[in-house]
Amino acid sequence: MESYSRYNIENDSRDYENFIEQNLDAIIEKYHKAEQKYRNLYDNSLDLLRTINLQGIITDCNKTYINTLGYTREETVGASIFEHVAEESLETLQDAFKTWKSNGIVRDRKIWLKKKDGQKFPTLLSATNLYDRTGNLIGSNTTIRDISEIYIAREETEQQKIKRISDIGVLSARIAHDLKNPLSVIKNSIELLKMRTTSLDDRTKKDYERIERATVRIAHQIDEVLEYVWPKPLEFSDSSLLDIFQTVISKINVQQVAIDLPRTDVNILCDASKLEIVFSNLILNAIQAMNGMGNIHIRTKNEEKTTIIEVEDTGHGIPQDLLPRIFEPLFTTRQIGTGLGLVSCKNIIEKHGGSIEIKTQMDKGTTFIINLPKIRINGLNLQK
Ligand SMILES: Nc1ncnc2c1ncn2[C@@H]1O[C@H](COP(=O)(O)OP(=O)(O)O)[C@@H](O)[C@H]1O
Ligand SMILES: [Mg+2]
Image (cartoon, rainbow, N blue to C red; front, side, top):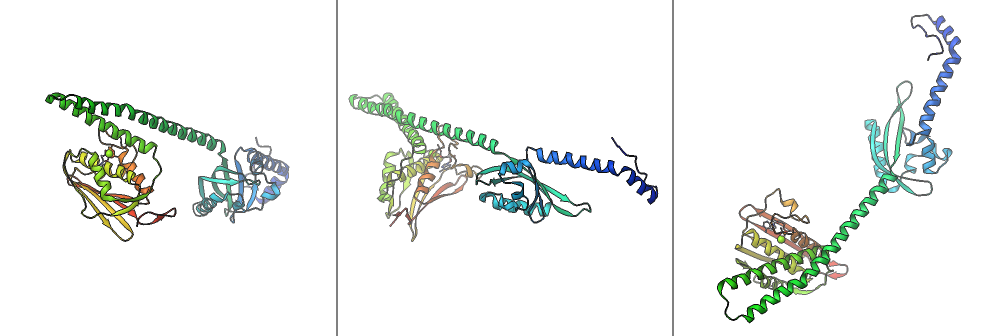
């Protein structure tokens, strides 16, 4: 509601002066009311509000800002915005400040602020331009939303998730471990049955072999799960790579696959039983990719700073779109796969300070290239 009469723009200046004189009190009152309304909105906002000049100096702020940060108004007005930011968000705030200066707007930047007592809390910061009466840019109004509660709730959910995953890990490790005993009972019993029965007919012999193959497969899957969820720490010793390859091959049903080993041996400082897991996984994957028929070449190169080991197969290759996923836990394209073989290989090689790479060509084959550095890790000389 207007409490003064409207001024007609077409009247002359005398009329204008009269108009002002007659309505001055009403105009001032309206101005004060508007100012009060704005101040109430500003002060009672649940968000932290601050007004800054072009240099990033705080020229005004609301009560929520002062109450939350724990400074007095006198300490706040005149302070730089960079005094109220936590160290880890300093760069983000500098960047937000730059963005505001060039674009005139910043929206929902996640920034950690620091209270007077040093306590930090997460916020979302948005800033818009502030102009004077003549349209010059003089600073910014910044809205800062304290998101501590959301952050804490998310942290709790995250913690619960981590706890659940680790419980599941412990549970699956326990089940896998417990399955090993009955499995070895089955394996040993088959051996005994075979020995006790002198003349086996062909069908029974084949049945026994099927049971044996199935137990080997289950044992391997259990080992893969255990290695992933319950990896034991590495134990380094001076080991022959050729010995490692031969041990692996002796435990595998190589079917109709010719495995070509390097002629010269290389001795390295490693955890031999862990590298056996790596090569057993790579060779089994290769045999599966060749449907049990083909060639595997294992090559070693003893270089000055590294030992390179290549495992090449003549299998179906890996499609380009699947390549980025094959080291992901649980990724498998096989019906009876665990999807844990390659991720364990990668973990083991990385724990040795090395890396694993792939070269692949569809319908030609795949080569896994392992690089083991001859470096010292934690004071241990990994390779001589
Ligand atoms: N030598 C290989 N040739 C072709 N594909 C391979 C080879 N090795 C691994 N892969 C692909 O990577 C996937 C993941 O392998 P891995 O982690 O060992 O799990 P799994 O053998 O249980 O499937 C396989 O399912 C397969 O698709
Ligand atoms: Mg595998």
